[in-house]
Image (cartoon, rainbow, N blue to C red; front, side):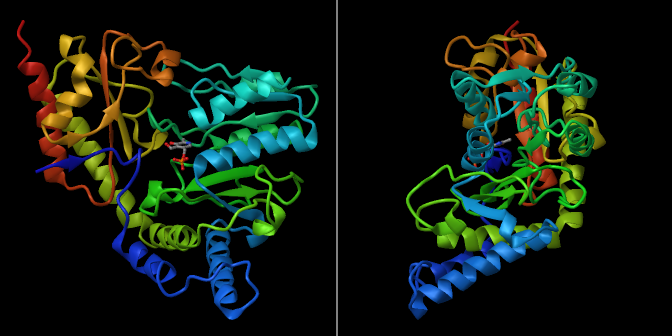
Amino acid sequence: MRVYLDNAATTPLDKEVFDAMAPFMLEHYGNPSSIHSHGREVRAAIEKARRTVATLLNTSPAEIFFTSGGTEADNMALVCTCHSLGIKRAITSKLEHHAVLHTMELLEKQGVEVLYLRHDERGNLDLDHLDELLAGQPQTLVSVMHANNEIGNLNDVEGIGRICKTHNAIFHSDTVQTMGHYKHDLQTLGANFIVGSAHKFHGPKGVGFLYCDAGVKIQPLIQGGAQERNMRGGTENVYGIIGLAKAMEIAYRDMEEHTRHIQGLKDRMISKLKEQMDDISFNGMSEFGDRSLYTVLNTSLPASDINEMLLFSMDINKVSVSGGSACSSGANTGSHVLRALGCDPERGSVRFSFSKYNTPEEIDFAAETLAKLYKNVPA
Ligand code: PLP
């Protein structure tokens, strides 16, 4: 048995998605910008995909822009907001994905003041601090992720949206880890930008989208063509877009059943690990059902010589996982999120992330594999 428990990194493509994409690799090959019928049929398929995404998110197709993935969509929201609207102040947190953090660092070099929200040792953001930082200030860009990809913490995006609205701030939320796993209603969410990445919900890699509130007038990030209604130059990733929409349709169709199944796997993993390991705990809020992604469990493991090679050891024992401790020595580049939480750099960390395709047997196998690694360490 080889077990894949790295679904927060990427998920396997759903066969139904592949079947929807295949005709756009073979039969329907026209360039969607061409005015002849080969082009027009592909254009119509892209617009249908856009309507599907927009309908599922309860918004208008005019507010959905397809991109090469979550990273590009995050870059587009942040960079274009600052450049197009002359925003000079931004607020985020040290727990964001590098798609946001590194973009903020770039904006800082370009003269934007970037401030970081306080959080506690479990990664809970201090929303009173957000309120304080926004009060009486010029228009500010706020970027806070919906859920953290490493520790799984779910942030109160509706609450953040309300605070932003009170202070006339522009709110971007990196929703890559919740898209296709939770329902987003853009009429109530209160975000000006959210993003999606198809490969995180059993769609293809290299395609995503940006929702951009029609009231926020930004200029494109990528120049060179009139595609995406002049908002993103470049011939569209047609079969990627078709796959994204299909994957999202399936995700929404089966969401209840999959949520129940995956939450069951996560609960099972927690109890199996606790049964077999004395000194185990869980980073962030990942142990708490309603406060974290049901797809992610981040373990904090005993200080041991094996920690340096932990992911490699899991891999040779046929379990694919990712992770990284707060320590950045040796081969391990470490985790900026665990460092920001102040986690003990001596302790190891494995992130298990689950999908609809995982089984209870796989969970038992992975938990036993991890526990055995620590039991077999010579004293
Ligand atoms: N944001 C978060 C929270 C993520 O987890 C990821 C992917 O790991 C990204 C952004 C980047 O998405 P993509 O791989 O589509 O560029």
